[in-house]
Image 1: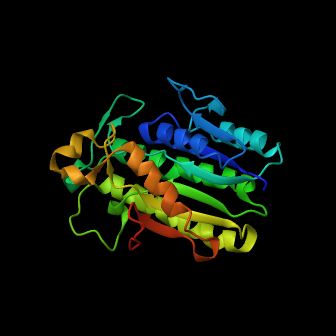
Image 2 (image 1 turned 60 degrees about the vertical axis):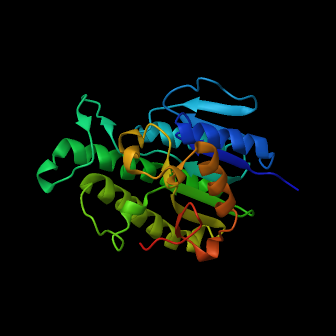
Image 3 (image 1 turned 120 degrees about the horizontal axis):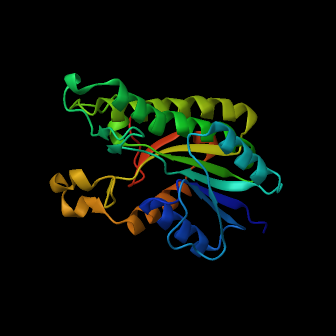
Length: 246
């Protein structure tokens, strides 16, 4: 049986690194590609690594064109890019807003650039890699707090809104893919709270049994992803495989 390729976008983060490891270990893919802004500290044998700036639209397009030139279909692309806190390029500290008074241009620009715009650029450019005879999955890491229906607490304006924007992009793309790339299934995935740098400032209120290792997180993702079908997409689902209200 012919094997397809896999691509991990944002492969230098904790989840991205583990995802690459499990994909290689599965033996299901002809070639595993990994792209990130920085080189991996512990590169794995058999993985094709690449570095590029994630906000460089031309670089993203050229990279995908190079992958497409191999004429080998990709059966899986996972975008791990996202931001909840940290610093902007101007060294401005970013934390989720607790009150509407905390909203500012810098925070909102950072959240929407990282969580919505950059994934949208990848969404646009990876479609030709996935389109083909074999079923293919395109996964973006979203969050339960992006659900407009489920929002009962408010706060976290920029993060919630930017991930909700990502969800809308995914829904729009799946409608179009039903016409032009019928084999491609889009998945908006909530991994739960994972023990990574992304969640460190917020772990104190998380029960121990709900703070997941990266190994468990990736295993759950790959298990549930295998159950999805393009005809039923897009999916907005959590780490248990349960649907989340858009």
